[in-house]
Length: 116
Image (cartoon, rainbow, N blue to C red):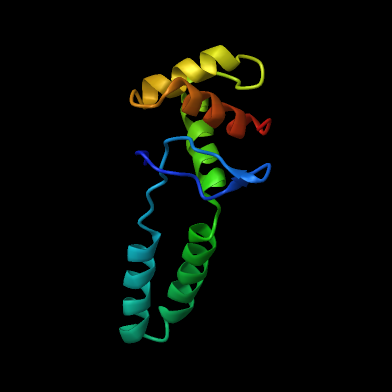
């Protein structure tokens, strides 16, 4: 999910560089569902159309939201509350993704806590 990159979300008039890149495969999944829709039966069509709509909604989420969701999952698995235990939360995030800088881990924790 993570790698070097530049955040496209704007923060206080400037670009926030976390050194984190969100990787998504939503487009590949959307393409596969669209292909399936071309040859599907009428009975399957409503389900595939619903799936296509859900994929589009999910793919349109901002990177900040995707990062926060990942971070909240890591913190939940570690049993850490990012609001009450920020230092422990940063440590848990860096354990989950050892290549993260301290700055990036702090920002991820704050995004997950809704404080950033």
